[in-house]
Amino acid sequence: MVRGASMKKHLRILNTDTVFNICVYGILTLLALMICYPLYFIVIASFSDPVLVNTGNVLFYPRGITFEGYQKILEYTKLWVGYRNTIVYTIGFTSIGTITTLLAGYALSRKDLVGRNFFMTLFVVTMFFSGGLVPTYFTVKSLGLSNTRWIIMILGSLTAYRVIITRTFFSSSIPDELYEAATIDGCSQTRFFVQIVLPLSKAITAVLIMYTAVQQWNSWFNAMVYLTDESMMPLQNILREIIISSQALSEAMEMSGLDDMNNHLMMVETMKYGIIIIASVPILCLYPFVQKYFAKGVMIGSIKG
Image (cartoon, rainbow, N blue to C red; front, side, top):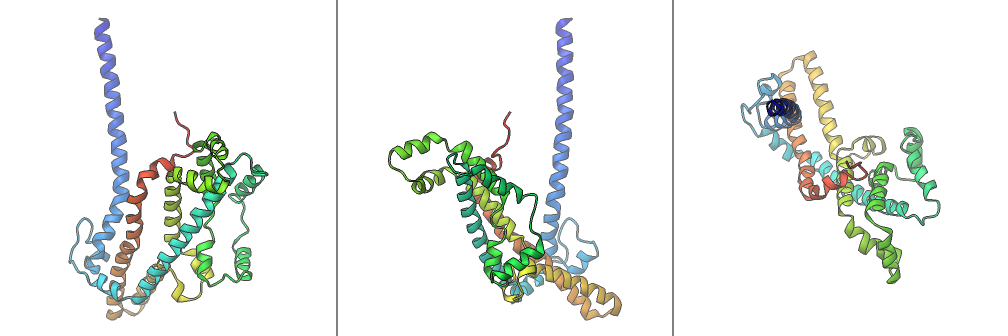
């Protein structure tokens, strides 16, 4: 009897776990489809007939395959100027942001830093309060950085959030005994940071590179506010102009009914999907090189059970 009751209890627990696993995998599958399908749709829409795309006839596979949109993209000089600018801004922004964040995080992790808590408080305050757009704009203008490439690469490259996770990493991963041993051997602060700390900080460095690169690559607001020269505009602003122009053309077409405008609108829509793919390729290429350290880095400061 006891054995039979134990078996029933075991089967009941097993059935409960099975139902739970089915629910979890069902939810995860649904979320994966919600994330992956829009990306898949953009890919197939980029080389499908724009008329069929706009009428909702392209859902699961490409129809009326045409590469005219990609051909127009290759001929669109303004796009490639923006692409070059975005690469330059991303490299500069990522370099400045990663270097300054590592330096600030290491300094704040040192217990012998005078005023460490005070400086940390100043960083935390900036997470809740900011000067606002108008004061920031006048400050940038007074510094002579308005309508220059430097403002895009400097503004926002150092954030309190990234400094905090970097400080947490150094505090938990670099023991004080390591610094004391290096000091006994005559190692200076600079040499200790460059030759010992940085090689042990690949995980947090990979996370910082990924965060800052993605942030800048997708950024468009700072360029819209602080840049007036069209030759300095990044790729995202070019894509924004195309989207706005397609909406304006659509409204004008409804009022006038011109066929030429309709054809132009269809081509703009096709180019839009192709540009989204081209704009996403560099970030997708970056991730495989940092994913080895990314999972470890994003768990910094988490509570482990």
